[in-house]
Length: 317
Image 1 (cartoon, rainbow, N blue to C red):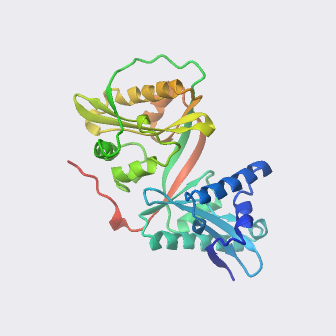
Image 2: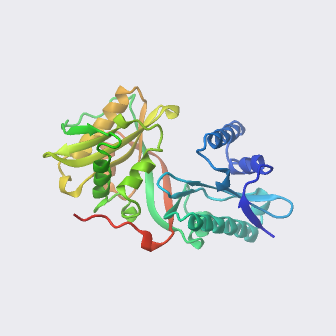
Image 3: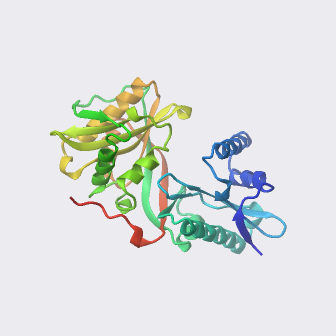
């Protein structure tokens, strides 16, 4: 009989070893140590590390993390090699773990749960679909090598304003929301969270510093928002979010914000600028390719909504 529960202290090291089994031994040890450190700092709760076992052995694990925007981050269940040899048992373990994920999402009243798949097609797709997840987007992960000469592009100047918590935060949040309207980037996500919730989430990406967030103005009105994060461990900046309100599109602001991010990252001494973009957003990908961005990874996003009635409705004013 399968039992699914949060990891116990007695099971923790075995659960972490299974969770990171795909990594080389040195990396596996590093990741386990990092998980311990994050738990010590309160950034990771062991309650979210789920285990499936029978009377004698650990059969599967699944990591979940409640994010700052009250979404639930979900990692695909990892099934023990002994169970993977029996397809019916593998499916049963995955189903049991994901059922507990769904229960956890509902129990904590979390609007949506999100999972990234590295490879498709894969058995994990069917696991997620059976648990109520739907495919939301295909993401391309791009990076720009800042140590190489960059293409010459027309330079356009727009007035920008640094993020000041509690001062212009509401304007940043409003512009993020407005930029979602008619966006080609992950349109299925429109309305899933407010601009304020999005800002909370982005503040947990990499190292947050207010000067890396900018509000751009055009014709004396707020027009675009640029949110960057620093990743010192990768010697890289991340362009975490860039959006333009519909009325300000087509004026070169998107290109100007990319130029701003590239120059700021270079001036900070970083070697790369990274970002993720919807694979079908050809317009944005063409802009990034102009600046020398290349794809280094691809992921499929799956999402489960807790209740459609909780979907946020964008302000159309």
